[in-house]
Length: 456
Image (cartoon, one colour):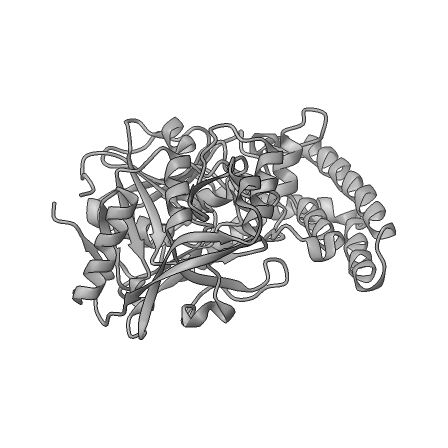
């Protein structure tokens, strides 16, 4: 069971889109929490919450519990990147849903890296130049802003820097010019449609007025913020919200299809006032939105994506799906060092199907001796990914290439119609047994009222 007296950290154990937002909303209502802290990621997060009264919001930079209580407060730690223009738009959307003065109850860290329009433009230019070798970026600029921040020789704007607007303007213009130079080089190396699309990006980067327009857009957002300082949480349980998924982790993900973030519990451990309860979130089936291998993938999602929020877009492409993959789930648990409990979401999406499936292993189409250092093998069957605490990029690239040559071994599972259907109960018990972790909450729909909690 999830304790009512401890902080709770929520991490996705897939490629993102596991249902972290709906779990944060449900936990806030169940535990009476009044604060949620985001500890990684940035404005590319897309945590959908649907309330029992029919309100819907896609949370990106606010904590996903803002609809749970009118006194809810949201904060972000220093690892979280901030995009002030998008933040202002999200605050306006929350106000339309009845959340009073959302920016006034948001606390951001002055050390947070600012994602500027110039990072967004160069992000899209880089993806266009990659052609068929795209990394699967969301195209929002988070990757370039994060990469720049790691190099002390590259100009970076942090949130606290915006207090000195004149200095921030000079830095922003320097960033614009640097991205313009890179985009010109990318354009010169392309032809056809990519060259034309890159020329449109260049037109925006040449706009000298874009710096002033950007700062003008930042001013009302910064003026309305609750604070730009380390957050002091109120009494009571604290919710710590992760973004993206462990399988996209910058070090442990399958290079180059990774996110610029540490997606484990590390950020939560840094910010929590106590030792948090570790809740890992998994869908009842596999999904991936963006480029990169998905061994379990079924053609056109295999009917698993009805009612899905994640639409096709020009940067991530199609949302993909397949049966629940035990190989990937075990790997994710090894990367995070285990969990106290699991949340299993989207069980309702499988209801009414003639049957379901479990991916119990992978079959590699080559000589398994060549990849024996990457995988756990049972005869010729891959049953697990060997966990390396500090993997090299070369290893992760090899792992990605090897996964592209794998096909799933699928064990048929009886279908179900409801949460208490014996077939559904057996499916959940099988997940618990094979992963060695208790499923403490089952989600049979999008709202908090659709969550079924273990006793306690």
